[in-house]
Figure 1 (cartoon, rainbow, N blue to C red):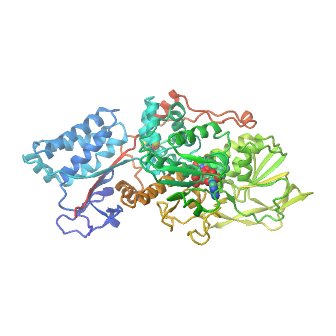
Figure 2: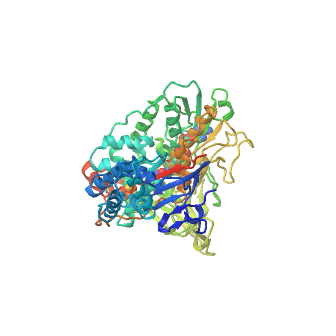
Figure 3: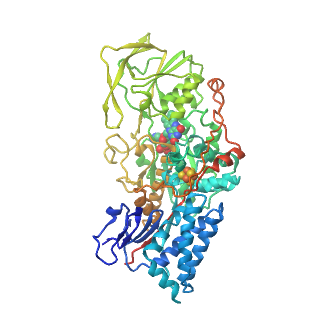
Length: 640
Ligand SMILES: Cc1cc2nc3c(=O)[nH]c(=O)nc-3n(C[C@H](O)[C@H](O)[C@H](O)COP(=O)(O)OP(=O)(O)OC[C@H]3O[C@@H](n4cnc5c(N)ncnc54)[C@H](O)[C@@H]3O)c2cc1C
Ligand code: SF4
């Protein structure tokens, strides 16, 4: 039973205290009223106050909420800093039975004044539910302030997050470390980053930055340069070891794959005290960050340094070791995590595609060979088929190898390209050409060598399942593009040949079927990263690796432990999406700073890193643009 007693959520007041209103439920106010197996008795946060249990004391609730909010007030303006502190103290006094009747007026005035006069958004948002409580439960406040009786203690859980933090799969405390960068406290900023991110230097260069896409500043001028700002403490600081239970457990666990998913799982499990062994068939760790991402975006020494930090904790990595049958690992290891990525290129339907021809290759294989230092014959004209990041990495790489003309052939238009805008722009600046709305249909060859590709022009029809307009061939529009190399970058799928056939559930696109915590249908087998999700990103693989490692830990501890309560709260509230609503004054427009890059002509001739790191001063100025959009959520559980 979870009907609402009172709700001011989203500005809509539902008041059923007298039992006269029509009963409202979670669906009516678009807010979950339970998480995991727990029912919520009261909830207070950025958009109001919700009560489902009439026994909850609203005065004590408001006091608890403001105590948490006051801790986060930043001190940039005394109205917010002192105002929230006075409110919190006043509410504590009232709750302790030492209030005065005039306290309620003071609370109302302060809450109104904070909403109107603070300099940033945090405090302006924080007082919203307090104002609702004061307005709608005024008698309760007056009576508590006038009595000399202490209120019963309230037990609550808080969650503090921000729109950027919520969008990040590993929930990095973005406002927290940006504040430290702003104050030039980069060592501490790195500590904050490293708590949830085992690859800070890698992600500071290559993260797809979901945080930036959900940055509130986007609605005002432009999002913070969060990814580039993360790189500053990551590059400057020395990563300190995290608290570890090293050597506390005898059990051994095996991980297949030393990519982001495997590394993040290994870090978690080794800190928990397990003996962790990673097996990888490649000659270096990093998975696709080693095999796929070119050195001009991610220098090899940076990646190697990050891996060293993880092995320094005691994680063992066995390179050049392909696992052929997962069951063989079971003899030595109690549990196995599969984090084997998606490395197999989809079959192409281009006519006369013959892998033995000189000049035909899969893009991912080509990048792997270059990144492994294999000597590659320079080509004059290279066609890259595809429109994603792999295609762009291939084209930019062939230019650096001395190719005269690199052309990306994509069947849709520029608008539909899945590759990141900044990568496409950088490729164009370096001289990569694009042939949109075309697709190769037949390889042209002479003496087992590629000499070109016959292509056909396309037009865009109605949107397909992916939501993008479907490319349709234009009959009779065939034309030939000369080339001495053709690379395909048309998407990767996992190679699961090491799993026992028919015993492990797989999806229709040949990835391992798991629940959201990385459990497969076999109790001792877990899976995470691209092999379960299909090709995604570094940060998503890291998040999945950690979740699966937590499940593995629960399995190893014979289910004696429970997943942290905060996790089911995260899950329940993730659905509603954290509000980007602003209530503070509109800040003056600012110009986003981008890191310097090597000029296009020089960079297209070498594998030197293209992007520079912000210096400390510029980073501090860019971090000043952050609005500290923290939101406090306070939850009281239903008893019994
Ligand atoms: C060209 C390219 C560029 C990319 N650029 C970016 C980027 O800029 N930003 C971003 O966020 N993402 C990027 N990605 C995606 C990102 O690299 C992947 O999503 C991420 O690495 C997946 O991590 P993972 O740990 O699941 O798998 P992987 O990183 O693929 O690691 C899996 C590992 O398992 C090993 N393995 C597989 N099978 C076996 C076996 N049987 N025995 C032993 N070892 C095995 C593999 O050798 C590999 O090392 C890019 C991908 C590509 C292809
Ligand atoms: S302004 Fe700062 S706190 Fe707000 S969403 Fe952007 S990065 Fe996060």
